Amino acid sequence: MELLASLAAEERWLFPAFLVMYAAIYCVGQLFVFRRWALRQRLDGSSCLISLFHGTPAALAAAGTILALPAGFRSFAAPNARLQDHVLDYSIAYFTMDLLHYLAFLPADVLFIAHHLATLFVFLTCRYMVRHGAYALLVLLVLAEVTSLLQNVWTLAGIWRDQSPAAARVYGALSPPFYVLYTLVRGVAGPLFLLKMTVFYLSGQAVDVIPWWVRISWIIVVGTAIAVSNLWIWNLWKELFRERNQATEKAKKDT
Image (cartoon, rainbow, N blue to C red; front, side, top):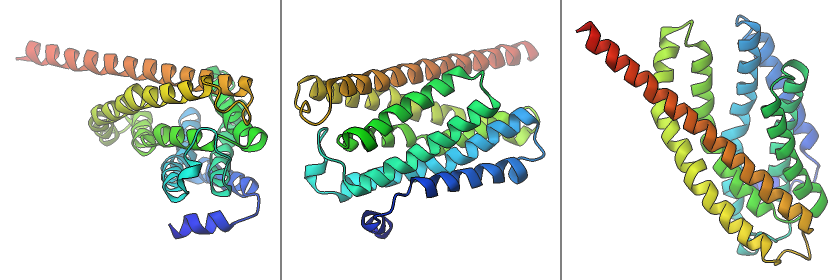
């Protein structure tokens, strides 16, 4: 709470400092942490590294901000508080850095680039254009990043599992709990909150502070992101069950 209080009192624009921080972490990943990995693995590892420094801290900061601010700020049309703006800038800096990573080294990953551009559009319009509605985005940020730590460790283990039996065991052990948590968050909590958000914004209650095209675009972007996330986890579940069935059949044949 002391950190949130100091952030709330901070009047400086923190986006540049956050961006420099992510750039430094990314360079550490590229030049030191993953320097012995193959190029594609090093690129994915460095992206995961900055995600580790974003996901859980952002989720905790967003949740803490929601709880710390007065009830008047817990509205889909409430004006942004300074503390909310700082949390948004923290995430904007991360998505900017990761977008630069994809544009520079992995321009063929169109899905990730489109996701980052859409996310930045929502965050930037809320933070710098309409300056209202941060509450909705912070709740969505908590839902999006609560699985981040588990997902990044799972991803790093998956990158290295072909070269390391230990990484393969970690990947196999983390897959079921990660899939369950991700399904609950993206398949249940996310859609329920989107429904509440959609009903509010389509009712016209925010018409004086958030233009209709911004409200509609937020709903479309968030809805699309949730749909794509659920398609992704559905495919992972199918792959997991297929691998388990194949392992069971192999064990039967061996006996």
